[in-house]
Length: 282
Image (cartoon, rainbow, N blue to C red):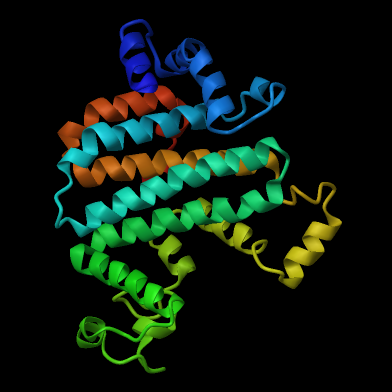
């Protein structure tokens, strides 16, 4: 619990959140170097870069927050809580992957992960807003995809719950068939967040993840073919999404009063995002 302990240690030593972030980075310098070596497998030269130190601290904070504080609160029949934990786990894993890619100047591959972060957040928020019935649909759709992958027939349980697998049955035939709301897609889920900036980011990254005419033209014309979307942008949206996912975890699992100590801690980790109205809206 490196970040948790460090945050507690410096709480009474600073007068504002901006100062706390700098003190925290200094205090955890050795931890950051070790993380870059063991988790990101960076070279000695790469470990000198500090562009994503804040993201690394958020990763460590989020993992300990879930493992030590949130997980004991999640009941076995809490389907929303189960999805929240699994989505956070994948989020953290692919955040580390993204930092590795960016460290090695592979920004083109990182774009897919950045898009996934926004989509993961929007899907999770949608499910938590809808409740356990929607979470069950999401989990059942995953089970159906397993059957499809293994070329196995539908189970009686799935047929009884959702009907036969026919073209008119959207549960089986469209990517967001698990949604109880009809004609749902990734863009609509992002729109539900009511964040114009995030919607712009999502649409931009979507343009690059397929071999579309747009992506082929933009990548071939870019000064740096690996970074048709700038490095700084990819870092910024990764940090924003992780920060807001942590807030989503807190809002689902705790009352407003219970959240306060942890909100103070993440405000010390990321004062710019904490004070940004856009992050609040998301």
